[in-house]
Image 1 (cartoon, chains in turn purple, green):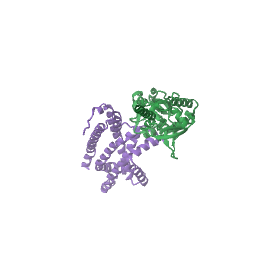
Image 2 (cartoon, one colour):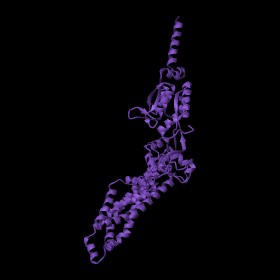
Image 3 (tube, helix red, strand yellow):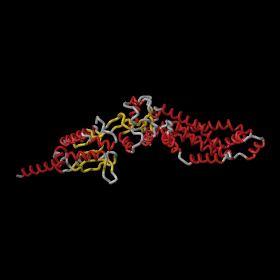
Image 4 (cartoon, chains in turn brown, purple):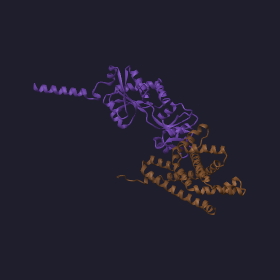
Length: 224
Length: 263
C-alpha cells in the first residue's frame, strides 16, 4: 500500500462539510416529525374500520413502499414542475422524505396498534370512552412503545437515505462529499471523512431516539 | 570509372530518399489533390454533431458537411477517412489524409506538428437560457439559479467568476443539469454549445440560447506543415463560406445556432 493520505486537502473544505451536516440533520428532524405524524394518522385511518379510509391509505403505503426513493424524489423535483408545482431542492427533498417515512411508519405503527389486547379496548368501552379517547389514552402509547425500536431504525434509514438528495443538488452531506472530491480529487479521504460523519450522526440519532423513547413511553408503560 | 559508378549509386540513393521523404520536399499538395481529383479528409464518426454514423452507415455531421463544401469549392471529389481523436493528427502527418476536419482545437503542441486554417466551427462553454432571461455577462447571474454539471470545466470556471449571490446548482451529470433546466428548476445552464445543440435537437419548450461565453476553443482545419498553397486555398474557401452564408447554414443544421460573429 503506497497510498499517502492527504486529509488536510479535505479539511480545507470544512465549511462545506459543516453546511452538509447541518442540512442533513435539518432534513432528518423535519421529516421525522412530519413523517411520524403522518404515520400515526395513517395507522389510525387503517385501523379505524372505515373501509374507504383504510383502502386510500393502503394504496398510498403500497405505492411508496414499492417504488425506489430516488424515483420518488425525481418525480417530485423534475416531474411536478410540469404540473406547475415547482419546489426548490430542499423542499422537494423534505417532501420526498416525509412522504417516504410516512408510508413506512404507517405500517410500523399499525402493527403496534393491532397488537393492542382486545380486553384493553373493551375496558375503555365499558368506561364509556369515545373511540378517540380510547385511541389517545389506551391504544397509541403502548403501541408506540412496542414499535419504537423498529421506528427508530426506520428513521435512521431515512437519515442515511437523505444522501440520495444530492442527486437534485440539495447540498447535504453527500453533496458536500461529491463537491469536495470534484475539486481536490481526493475521493478516498473525502469519503473516509464523510463516512465517519454519517456514522457519528447515526449513532447520535439512535441515542437521542432511545432517550426520547425512554422518556415518553417507558414510564407510562410501567404504570399501565 | 569505379568512382563514377559509386557517385551514381549515391545520387540514386539520394534521389530515392528525397522522393520518399515527407513534408516540404514532396510535390505541392494542392496540385496533387487537383490532379487526382480526390480530397482525402479525416473526419470523426464518434462525436456528434460534428461527425457520427447515420442510419445508412454513412458518416454525417458538421465536419462532414464542411469537408464536402471544401471539396466542392476545389472542384474535386471528397473521400472521407474515419479517424478517432487520438489518431487524427498522425493520419495527416503520414499523408493518409490531406486535411483533418475533426473538431480539432488549436494548441502550441499541435502547432509544432501541423498548420491550422482559420476557425471553421464554434466550440465553447457558455451560459445558455431562454430568450426572456437576460444574462449578457457574468455579473447578470446575480440572484439567478444556474444549473451546471458538478466538477465540469464550466463548474470550476463559473465558480471562480460568478457573483456571490448567483445561485449555482450543481448536478451529478449532464442529464441532471438538462432535466433541471427543462423542468424550470434553474433559469440558466452553463454547458457546452454541443450539449445545448443536443437539447435544441429535441425541440423542448424551454430553449437554451447562448448568453455569453465562459471558455472558447473553436475548431480549426489541420493541414500538413509547409503546404502554404493548400492552406491559403482552404482559408479562402472558409472565408467565402462565412460571408455567403453556406457555413452558417451548416451551423444552423448541426448546432441549431447561428455562427458566432467573431469566429
